[in-house]
Amino acid sequence: MTTTDLAEAKRYRLLADSGILTAAALREAGHAAAARGVEIEKVLVHEYGVPRLTVLKALSEYYGRPFIEYDERMPIAPEILAGLDGERLSMSQWFPVIKEGDTIVIAANRPDDPDVVSEVRRFTGGNKFEFWVALGEDIQWFIQDFLHSKPGHLIGTERTGLAFWRNTMAQWRTRLACYRTDLATARTELALLRWGLGLIGVSNALMRTQKSGAVFIMYWLMTAAGFSLVVLGLRGYIKIRKSMMK
Image (cartoon, rainbow, N blue to C red):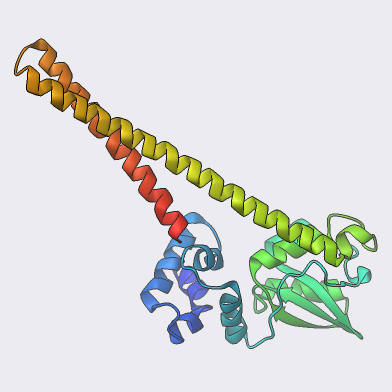
């Protein structure tokens, strides 16, 4: 693991200090995130089963700042969204979320990054600002939801409770569709396994009736093909099984 990767894993050291993950598991998560080019928080949540709120609290503890989660019903003031570049915000991972008096609250994944601080200072134009910690995934949701239309319009900058539940159920539907796809894939793998066992059984029975000859070689080829199908089917099924258990 490089120095950068170690520094990234260090942000979540509260998880190891509190016994939620071992130090070795945290290092492994850092390795996995670096190898895949993804954020370590995604690996912690989706592969190690750490609750998102727990990961967020670890970041909050590390930076000593309040935390904030994405909520599409949040009434973000349109004036603090004007002139924002979604692509730039996505790269820097920050987003203005609250305006209290002359102070703007900035949700940021790395509030101690000098480049982020410099960008926010230019954006606020001399106004006061303070950082709150947020997950990178939540910041992406803020950007996608609140910057896809002109500030001040109903859709994109304000949400009703009905729209919130509609989107929530849409996410549930997507997850169920993923489960359905996994189950269909597992069924296909089991079919391969069944065909492989069938070939092995048939070839074994035929070999018992004929001990030698040119046809006997074909029976061995059938056995080899059966074993190949068994290995392919079993490997695919175990992979799906492990992912569903996680």
